[in-house]
Image (cartoon, rainbow, N blue to C red; front, side):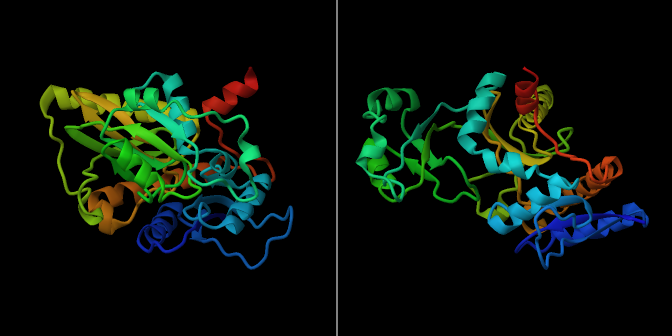
Length: 317
Protein backbone atom coordinates (compact mmCIF):
# COMPACT_ATOMS: atom_id res chain seq x y z
CA UNK A 1 0.00 0.00 0.00
CA UNK A 2 1.39 3.40 -1.00
CA UNK A 3 1.97 6.23 1.45
CA UNK A 4 -0.15 9.34 0.81
CA UNK A 5 1.38 12.81 0.51
CA UNK A 6 -1.10 15.68 0.55
CA UNK A 7 -0.86 19.35 -0.29
CA UNK A 8 -3.21 21.89 1.28
CA UNK A 9 -3.52 25.05 -0.82
CA UNK A 10 -5.73 27.95 -1.79
CA UNK A 11 -5.72 30.21 -4.83
CA UNK A 12 -2.28 29.29 -6.19
CA UNK A 13 -2.43 27.18 -9.33
CA UNK A 14 1.06 26.35 -10.60
CA UNK A 15 3.09 24.95 -7.69
CA UNK A 16 0.52 22.54 -6.16
CA UNK A 17 -0.24 20.67 -9.38
CA UNK A 18 3.43 20.55 -10.43
CA UNK A 19 4.32 19.26 -6.95
CA UNK A 20 1.69 16.52 -7.16
CA UNK A 21 2.88 15.48 -10.62
CA UNK A 22 6.55 15.39 -9.53
CA UNK A 23 5.84 13.32 -6.38
CA UNK A 24 3.83 10.83 -8.42
CA UNK A 25 6.66 10.64 -10.95
CA UNK A 26 9.39 10.13 -8.33
CA UNK A 27 7.26 8.02 -5.97
CA UNK A 28 6.83 5.20 -8.51
CA UNK A 29 3.62 4.02 -6.88
CA UNK A 30 5.13 3.69 -3.39
CA UNK A 31 4.41 7.36 -2.63
CA UNK A 32 1.44 9.16 -4.15
CA UNK A 33 0.42 12.81 -3.93
CA UNK A 34 -2.98 14.49 -4.08
CA UNK A 35 -4.75 17.65 -2.88
CA UNK A 36 -5.78 17.10 0.75
CA UNK A 37 -9.44 16.08 0.81
CA UNK A 38 -11.53 17.14 3.81
CA UNK A 39 -15.22 16.36 4.27
CA UNK A 40 -15.19 16.11 8.05
CA UNK A 41 -12.89 16.69 11.00
CA UNK A 42 -13.50 14.45 13.99
CA UNK A 43 -11.39 14.94 17.09
CA UNK A 44 -8.45 12.56 17.26
CA UNK A 45 -9.22 10.78 13.98
CA UNK A 46 -6.39 9.89 11.59
CA UNK A 47 -7.17 10.77 7.96
CA UNK A 48 -4.32 8.78 6.49
CA UNK A 49 -1.69 11.23 5.22
CA UNK A 50 1.98 10.45 5.83
CA UNK A 51 3.04 13.98 4.85
CA UNK A 52 1.14 17.21 4.20
CA UNK A 53 2.62 20.39 2.73
CA UNK A 54 0.71 23.37 4.09
CA UNK A 55 0.33 26.39 1.81
CA UNK A 56 -2.81 28.04 3.18
CA UNK A 57 -3.56 27.45 6.89
CA UNK A 58 -2.17 30.87 7.83
CA UNK A 59 -5.38 32.27 6.27
CA UNK A 60 -7.84 29.53 7.26
CA UNK A 61 -8.09 28.64 10.99
CA UNK A 62 -10.13 25.50 10.20
CA UNK A 63 -7.20 24.15 8.17
CA UNK A 64 -4.74 24.94 10.97
CA UNK A 65 -6.88 22.87 13.35
CA UNK A 66 -6.98 20.04 10.80
CA UNK A 67 -3.18 20.05 10.55
CA UNK A 68 -2.66 20.01 14.31
CA UNK A 69 -4.93 16.99 14.56
CA UNK A 70 -3.05 15.34 11.68
CA UNK A 71 0.28 16.00 13.44
CA UNK A 72 -0.94 14.33 16.62
CA UNK A 73 -1.89 11.28 14.57
CA UNK A 74 1.54 10.96 12.96
CA UNK A 75 1.39 13.08 9.81
CA UNK A 76 4.62 14.97 9.10
CA UNK A 77 3.34 18.50 8.38
CA UNK A 78 5.49 20.97 6.44
CA UNK A 79 5.60 23.41 8.24
CA UNK A 80 5.00 22.44 11.90
CA UNK A 81 1.53 23.98 12.58
CA UNK A 82 2.16 24.32 16.33
CA UNK A 83 5.32 26.39 15.88
CA UNK A 84 3.81 28.39 13.01
CA UNK A 85 0.89 29.30 15.30
CA UNK A 86 3.31 30.55 17.97
CA UNK A 87 5.84 32.34 15.76
CA UNK A 88 5.89 35.86 14.33
CA UNK A 89 8.34 38.23 12.67
CA UNK A 90 9.42 40.19 15.74
CA UNK A 91 10.28 37.02 17.66
CA UNK A 92 12.22 35.88 14.57
CA UNK A 93 14.29 39.05 14.85
CA UNK A 94 14.83 38.55 18.59
CA UNK A 95 16.04 34.99 18.01
CA UNK A 96 18.38 35.95 15.17
CA UNK A 97 20.03 38.61 17.36
CA UNK A 98 21.02 35.70 19.64
CA UNK A 99 22.47 33.87 16.63
CA UNK A 100 24.75 36.87 16.13
CA UNK A 101 23.68 37.61 12.54
CA UNK A 102 23.49 41.14 11.07
CA UNK A 103 19.99 42.64 11.25
CA UNK A 104 18.42 46.07 10.76
CA UNK A 105 17.82 47.80 14.09
CA UNK A 106 14.19 47.11 15.03
CA UNK A 107 11.71 48.25 17.71
CA UNK A 108 8.15 47.05 18.34
CA UNK A 109 5.41 49.69 18.67
CA UNK A 110 2.10 49.32 20.53
CA UNK A 111 -0.98 49.37 18.30
CA UNK A 112 -2.43 52.79 17.54
CA UNK A 113 -5.90 51.63 18.57
CA UNK A 114 -6.62 49.53 21.65
CA UNK A 115 -7.58 45.90 21.04
CA UNK A 116 -11.27 45.05 21.37
CA UNK A 117 -12.53 44.52 24.91
CA UNK A 118 -9.72 46.54 26.48
CA UNK A 119 -9.72 49.94 28.17
CA UNK A 120 -7.10 52.43 29.25
CA UNK A 121 -6.77 50.46 32.51
CA UNK A 122 -5.67 47.41 30.50
CA UNK A 123 -2.43 49.24 29.71
CA UNK A 124 -1.29 50.30 33.18
CA UNK A 125 2.09 48.61 32.59
CA UNK A 126 2.73 50.56 29.39
CA UNK A 127 4.55 53.86 29.84
CA UNK A 128 5.13 56.57 27.27
CA UNK A 129 7.40 55.14 24.58
CA UNK A 130 10.95 56.46 24.57
CA UNK A 131 10.52 57.97 21.12
CA UNK A 132 13.68 60.06 21.27
CA UNK A 133 15.85 56.98 21.80
CA UNK A 134 13.93 54.93 19.22
CA UNK A 135 14.30 57.58 16.52
CA UNK A 136 17.96 58.09 17.37
CA UNK A 137 18.64 54.35 16.98
CA UNK A 138 16.52 53.76 13.87
CA UNK A 139 17.09 56.98 11.94
CA UNK A 140 14.98 58.17 8.99
CA UNK A 141 13.85 57.15 6.45
CA UNK A 142 12.72 53.90 8.09
CA UNK A 143 10.28 51.08 7.44
CA UNK A 144 7.19 50.20 9.42
CA UNK A 145 5.48 46.83 8.98
CA UNK A 146 3.25 44.44 10.97
CA UNK A 147 5.03 42.19 13.47
CA UNK A 148 3.19 39.22 11.96
CA UNK A 149 1.72 38.49 8.57
CA UNK A 150 3.28 38.90 5.16
CA UNK A 151 2.65 39.50 1.48
CA UNK A 152 3.98 43.08 1.76
CA UNK A 153 0.65 44.12 3.33
CA UNK A 154 0.63 47.32 5.43
CA UNK A 155 4.32 48.03 4.80
CA UNK A 156 5.21 51.74 5.01
CA UNK A 157 8.32 53.78 4.31
CA UNK A 158 8.35 56.67 6.78
CA UNK A 159 10.37 59.81 6.13
CA UNK A 160 10.27 61.52 9.55
CA UNK A 161 8.38 61.43 12.89
CA UNK A 162 5.38 63.35 11.51
CA UNK A 163 5.11 60.93 8.59
CA UNK A 164 5.29 58.03 11.06
CA UNK A 165 2.42 59.45 13.20
CA UNK A 166 0.26 59.90 10.09
CA UNK A 167 0.88 56.39 8.77
CA UNK A 168 0.59 54.81 12.20
CA UNK A 169 -2.89 56.34 12.29
CA UNK A 170 -3.86 54.07 9.36
CA UNK A 171 -2.83 50.84 11.09
CA UNK A 172 -5.70 50.46 13.57
CA UNK A 173 -5.07 47.55 15.94
CA UNK A 174 -2.06 46.21 14.06
CA UNK A 175 1.12 45.91 16.13
CA UNK A 176 3.91 47.38 14.02
CA UNK A 177 7.68 47.05 13.88
CA UNK A 178 9.78 50.11 13.15
CA UNK A 179 12.92 49.10 11.31
CA UNK A 180 16.11 50.77 10.16
CA UNK A 181 16.35 51.21 6.39
CA UNK A 182 19.25 49.28 4.88
CA UNK A 183 20.43 51.12 1.77
CA UNK A 184 21.47 48.06 -0.19
CA UNK A 185 23.61 47.46 -3.25
CA UNK A 186 22.19 43.98 -3.75
CA UNK A 187 19.23 41.92 -2.55
CA UNK A 188 18.50 38.18 -2.45
CA UNK A 189 15.57 35.92 -1.71
CA UNK A 190 16.52 32.42 -0.62
CA UNK A 191 14.50 29.21 -0.61
CA UNK A 192 15.38 26.79 2.20
CA UNK A 193 13.95 23.27 2.19
CA UNK A 194 14.37 20.68 4.91
CA UNK A 195 16.71 22.98 6.83
CA UNK A 196 19.48 21.79 4.45
CA UNK A 197 18.72 22.62 0.79
CA UNK A 198 19.37 26.26 -0.17
CA UNK A 199 18.58 28.06 -3.42
CA UNK A 200 19.72 31.70 -3.67
CA UNK A 201 17.83 34.05 -6.03
CA UNK A 202 18.78 37.63 -6.93
CA UNK A 203 15.69 39.69 -6.11
CA UNK A 204 14.64 43.31 -6.58
CA UNK A 205 11.86 44.20 -4.12
CA UNK A 206 11.39 47.63 -5.72
CA UNK A 207 10.25 46.07 -9.02
CA UNK A 208 6.61 45.24 -9.79
CA UNK A 209 5.73 41.85 -8.29
CA UNK A 210 6.06 39.85 -11.53
CA UNK A 211 9.50 41.36 -12.24
CA UNK A 212 11.14 41.04 -8.81
CA UNK A 213 13.11 37.94 -9.83
CA UNK A 214 14.13 39.48 -13.17
CA UNK A 215 17.46 40.85 -11.96
CA UNK A 216 21.11 39.87 -11.53
CA UNK A 217 23.71 40.07 -8.77
CA UNK A 218 25.51 43.42 -8.66
CA UNK A 219 28.68 41.86 -7.22
CA UNK A 220 31.00 39.50 -9.08
CA UNK A 221 34.07 37.29 -8.71
CA UNK A 222 35.48 36.42 -5.29
CA UNK A 223 33.40 39.10 -3.58
CA UNK A 224 30.15 37.58 -4.89
CA UNK A 225 31.36 34.09 -3.98
CA UNK A 226 31.97 35.19 -0.39
CA UNK A 227 28.57 36.90 -0.14
CA UNK A 228 26.74 33.82 -1.45
CA UNK A 229 28.61 31.53 0.96
CA UNK A 230 27.67 33.82 3.85
CA UNK A 231 24.02 33.95 2.75
CA UNK A 232 23.87 30.16 2.58
CA UNK A 233 25.42 29.85 6.05
CA UNK A 234 23.03 32.42 7.55
CA UNK A 235 20.01 30.82 5.86
CA UNK A 236 20.81 27.40 7.31
CA UNK A 237 21.44 28.82 10.80
CA UNK A 238 18.13 30.72 10.78
CA UNK A 239 16.00 27.81 9.57
CA UNK A 240 17.69 25.25 11.80
CA UNK A 241 17.01 27.51 14.80
CA UNK A 242 13.39 28.19 13.82
CA UNK A 243 12.66 24.68 12.58
CA UNK A 244 11.02 25.63 9.28
CA UNK A 245 11.26 23.03 6.51
CA UNK A 246 9.88 25.31 3.78
CA UNK A 247 10.74 28.98 4.09
CA UNK A 248 12.32 31.94 2.36
CA UNK A 249 14.86 34.33 3.83
CA UNK A 250 15.55 37.79 2.39
CA UNK A 251 18.93 39.52 2.58
CA UNK A 252 19.88 43.11 1.78
CA UNK A 253 23.60 43.47 1.07
CA UNK A 254 25.23 46.70 2.26
CA UNK A 255 29.00 47.20 1.95
CA UNK A 256 29.38 43.48 1.22
CA UNK A 257 27.51 42.44 4.40
CA UNK A 258 24.22 40.49 4.05
CA UNK A 259 21.58 41.75 6.51
CA UNK A 260 18.71 39.36 7.23
CA UNK A 261 15.59 41.39 6.46
CA UNK A 262 12.70 38.94 6.49
CA UNK A 263 12.76 35.25 7.40
CA UNK A 264 9.25 34.31 8.47
CA UNK A 265 7.73 33.17 5.17
CA UNK A 266 6.55 29.59 5.81
CA UNK A 267 4.23 29.62 2.76
CA UNK A 268 6.52 31.47 0.35
CA UNK A 269 5.69 32.45 -3.21
CA UNK A 270 6.30 29.50 -5.54
CA UNK A 271 4.29 30.61 -8.58
CA UNK A 272 6.08 30.10 -11.90
CA UNK A 273 4.67 33.43 -13.12
CA UNK A 274 6.56 35.38 -10.46
CA UNK A 275 9.60 33.27 -9.50
CA UNK A 276 10.43 32.26 -13.08
CA UNK A 277 10.92 28.87 -14.71
CA UNK A 278 14.39 28.04 -13.32
CA UNK A 279 13.50 28.84 -9.69
CA UNK A 280 10.14 27.10 -10.09
CA UNK A 281 11.80 23.93 -11.36
CA UNK A 282 14.17 23.90 -8.35
CA UNK A 283 11.43 24.36 -5.75
CA UNK A 284 9.11 21.74 -7.27
CA UNK A 285 11.90 19.14 -7.61
CA UNK A 286 13.29 19.66 -4.11
CA UNK A 287 9.89 19.94 -2.40
CA UNK A 288 8.84 16.64 -3.98
CA UNK A 289 12.10 14.92 -3.02
CA UNK A 290 11.88 16.22 0.55
CA UNK A 291 8.21 15.18 0.94
CA UNK A 292 9.08 11.65 -0.19
CA UNK A 293 12.10 11.60 2.14
CA UNK A 294 9.86 12.51 5.09
CA UNK A 295 7.22 9.98 4.03
CA UNK A 296 9.89 7.27 4.08
CA UNK A 297 10.89 8.24 7.63
CA UNK A 298 7.34 8.78 8.89
CA UNK A 299 6.10 6.24 11.42
CA UNK A 300 2.30 5.83 11.43
CA UNK A 301 0.69 6.54 14.80
CA UNK A 302 3.83 8.20 16.17
CA UNK A 303 4.34 11.95 16.43
CA UNK A 304 6.58 13.04 13.55
CA UNK A 305 6.90 16.72 14.40
CA UNK A 306 9.91 18.83 13.45
CA UNK A 307 11.14 21.41 15.96
CA UNK A 308 13.94 23.92 15.58
CA UNK A 309 17.03 24.00 17.76
CA UNK A 310 15.59 26.94 19.74
CA UNK A 311 12.77 24.75 21.08
CA UNK A 312 14.76 21.51 21.31
CA UNK A 313 17.61 23.20 23.22
CA UNK A 314 15.07 24.81 25.57
CA UNK A 315 13.52 21.42 26.34
CA UNK A 316 16.92 19.81 26.93
CA UNK A 317 17.94 22.57 29.31
